Image (cartoon, rainbow, N blue to C red; front, side, top):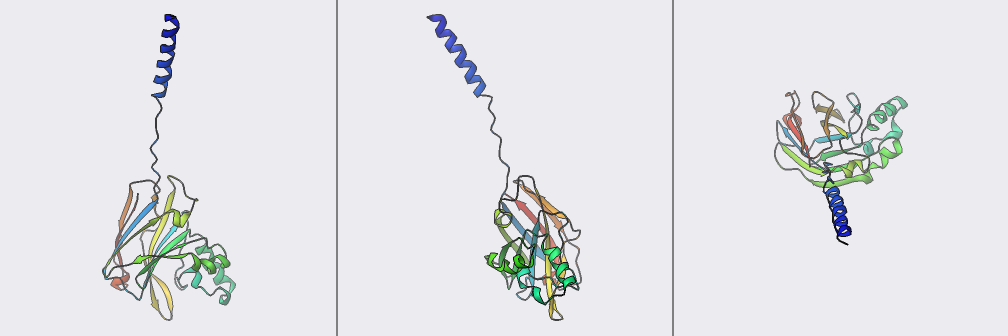
Length: 215
């Protein structure tokens, strides 16, 4: 009887020691992206400011002489085929964007891979908050609100911060990050920062420095 009892205790100790070796892996997946940008002058109610987001390292932004406006504002049916293809090829590389218009901050989820999707994207335009009356812009949002379930731990999130100006009856790129190709890894406690050379544009759309972090 005692032999059976000791055998039972011995087996129990083996099981317990095996359980003690179980390791819990800490999840480092981030979802909250915080953005801050400093400009040379106070943010203007008359200009627009963009944070463009993509999982494509080759994503592109329309450049002059093409206008840079929100995809749903483009009058697609009025464009000749070459201009339509140029713009769509660039918008199609975006997963989504944040836009500051009249000091109101909105997020817009893609895709924009067809003219129909681009034109319908106004329905995905969600108000976030108002920008302050200073040269400092700051906001945060959930990555899932832009990428949905299409993003994984460790993915590179490519981005550009872009300002546009109204001139000659159009809306054109004024300033952007230099160099391009900036990205942040989708992991908690990741921070990327940078500065931008002063340009000849108006101070309110002249990017000085920026920071992105994921929590």
